[in-house]
Image (cartoon, rainbow, N blue to C red; front, side):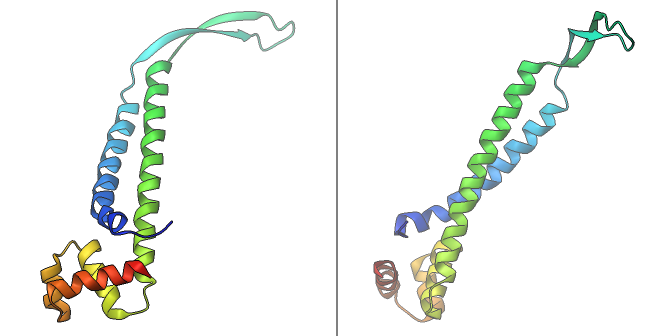
Length: 140
């Protein structure tokens, strides 16, 4: 997939989303420790021949609640994995740029969240030149 300015701008929000998903997953995992228990009936057989079926009452976690939490954890982990993949692609794109100044410009603007003016002051360019360099990099 082609790297665009819009994809690069997503980097900061991807990192925030990853942090948020981590917190959500931790909360859901904590909830798995507090799932209410219910009683259920199961069929068992005696240990010796003639294996006569017997019904036992067992105590277990509420299966509906446990399944719902497990599904939500799976969904959030999948979203987190996708966000991490997208953030990694952005980092790899910037790291693969051969020109050091261009790499610094993209790193400061998109990864570190600096303004184009701050970036220009750091690398010795004007704000307008920074914008031109970004446009030139993304055209290639």
